Image 1 (tube, rainbow, N blue to C red):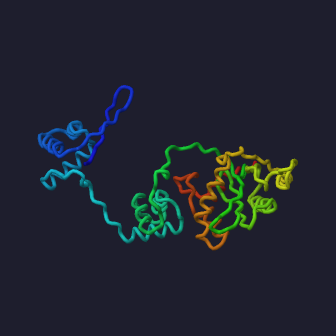
Image 2 (image 1 turned 135 degrees about the vertical axis):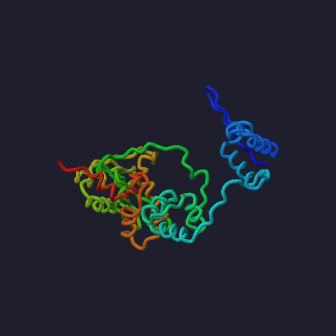
Image 3 (image 1 turned 90 degrees about the horizontal axis):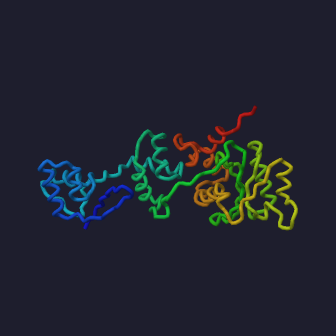
Length: 305
């Protein structure tokens, strides 16, 4: 049996009452509509939505029969066309992003509109996406704290990639999310961390470096580590995250999730870096113009005075 929801507004709260839609109710709705009742009046009579009243009455006018309970009375889904499949497939292979972002990229690149739900169904059919579970639905927005200008601060960390069976060191610009350096090696060492920072510094003067308390970044026996000495020599302030608080370095942690899932799509490290920085739009940036980290890095670069 289908159930419908009626929402009644009271002075200080809202109460949602579930009501069963029966065939007798449908007959009564249709009769009242035939007598000249408005859709709103009929909706209050049965405790269903205005849209639902219009659906069942339209079905009655087309078939001259009372619609059956539990059967869809809306517009039938339009079959997916071959051009839609090929367009979505091509766009996903290039960008490898969510359906909602693909919708905007397809509009920009192909001048065609495909609804994001339709895109998701196509991706499911192609085996390029998974069904969304409850945990995939964001319950509330969070406030992002980020630097205003590029190179004001960078996030660094090590990560073990089980798919490639190697260690990865990344340097992410806080303001633009640009990947400034990526080191792939067999073990996470202080020396490799310093080499990664040297690569990042080729993009410009870095003011602050945000890291966790990993042994590659701090000394466990007192005094300054080689990494801290390197930062001091280059006038880079080290900022240590709160212990047992990974959110403090969340930007680089989020990057590693993407690295784990997408790195294998590219033959070389350089191809992956170019795709991440210059091809794939980043949702946390200017989403209206589908901004990439490279574009944001340039836009947020502080003007010299």
